[in-house]
Image 1 (cartoon, one colour):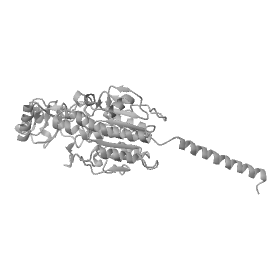
Image 2 (image 1 turned 30 degrees about the vertical axis):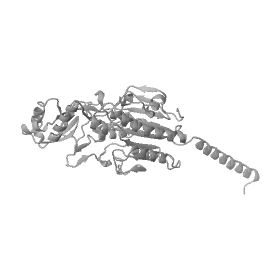
Image 3 (image 1 turned 120 degrees about the vertical axis):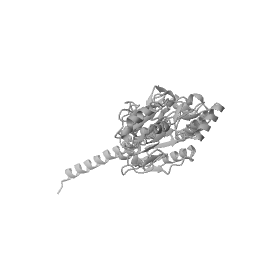
Image 4 (image 1 turned 180 degrees about the vertical axis):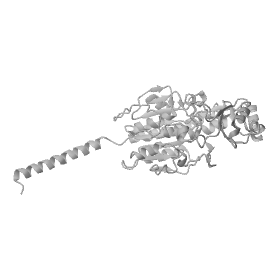
Length: 418
């Protein structure tokens, strides 16, 4: 039997515990919404393109947030390797996507694939999901299938290049309008950028400005949506590109030199870079000697690549890596290509290409950041592609992807800085 004083004490303690729990709940509610990080890739948008146009959204990011003088891609400076590096924070020699197209030693071909099983390093959307942050992806290399049993909560598939940025902005805003328990913390989306125009007409074409402004208008519409929702206190937007673009006009085909030397090989072309898969690896020295005679081509055995390349992935890389500098392009010879090059030269125009050494000025991309956790009006000299994923992770308050080698660009606190 409990005496009256003891019973009163028990009631008091229970009431005190209830009050304490209510206070904790109120504090948790007062903390506000969970962070949201939106990562946008503007394909093929060179570092100097924004200076050519009177942008609204990018200019706002530079004025009220952070911009970089250039983003340095990984090698090769091609779309698929760099999108995976942007998402994993590491190089092709660790994540395994060595080009847009390649073959493995078992004969299986990777050809602009969105199958995540090819990726050997953890992508950012998996990093988020593993740490209980919902992710949403509207087109990104490797996002369409599960990666080792996990996938983004929300994902758009299959990839369709005909889908414009207006549809992506609409979907991003729809995701942001979901209830707190359902809203994604990480949103990633590939945008067309200026890649198509740069390839077709060259990086100096006036149409570059037209395309850049079209992309900027959709970004401004996204920002207007964030403004109207009062979302900037918990939202950060990162805009990056995978590579730049160089004017190209001279095609180089190494296959005739290999054939003349009696070397049987498959060459997988990548514009500024190519992989040579020898039918007989014992012919490597003969192949290197033959390739040394091809003007403008540098040939490296894949067990002796320069340290900065970081592109050799066992079982996927060829026996030899070829590299050229712009305006040369590594391509298979054809009468169509010859005619096209002749006509372009006659018209005084060029096509555009990439895949070259990352440090070449033309390969530099863009990087902008705006919102929570981002200082105001800061210009960084250089941002690396491998820094984007750890930066996004830090803004979300989670650890970076497991194989990440990059660093967060900002020191993120719990309070908003925007």
